[in-house]
Amino acid sequence: MTPIALPKRLRIDTAAECWQVLRAALDVGEDLQLDSAAVTDVDAAGVQVLLMARHSAARNAQGCSLTRTSAVLAQALQALGVPDDGFGSSAAQHDDKDSGDMNG
Image: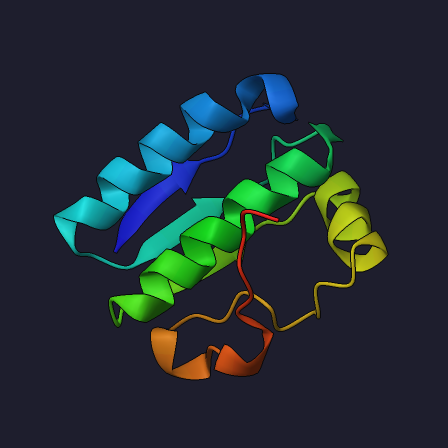
């Protein structure tokens, strides 16, 4: 499992850099454990990065989980309709029915 601390700002201006970090970790082939305790500022682009990581992990039979989810991130996930179990601890928990195109 690859633990990754998410940045304080998870917004459109930091999304590309965060995606590069997550993508590199996914390329290693291990499950991702995303520590989101530090996230205090998030927007839809930041959530989209997390959903892309989850989707990419599931496609490669890797897990992607959130740990220590900050209240700000939990509220953003809820507001955008991401279910509480949207980030399971293993790829087997991923429900592929909600895997849409993340580009639009």
